[in-house]
Length: 123
Figure 1 (cartoon, rainbow, N blue to C red):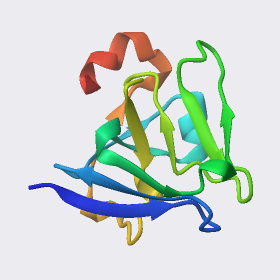
Figure 2: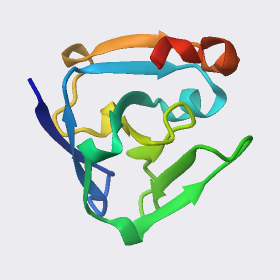
Figure 3: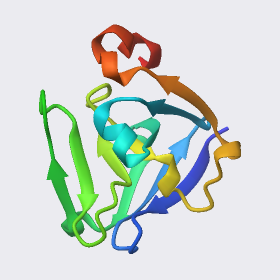
């Protein structure tokens, strides 16, 4: 069953909807995800719908510059981005979904500090 969830940044400038078949998220231990408290809900780009705020987004890249870290330039929240692991997909921060509760998702750890060794876990 496909479920449609809505979310966005803190100030409301960026809003989106995402279609998910499962509430499975990954908690990565890499340097940037730990600092942001990011919970990855990875979907195909076709299942992600930006409703508003494209003009409010700024981009940050580092290391391989494959991941496109997008964040709201007004409030600074990264509610979604284009991940290195799935460059043809979108990683939504489950914590930025409306009515998010940790118990409503299956949260699995991901060893992002050793990304190359562990990436097969989420492919």
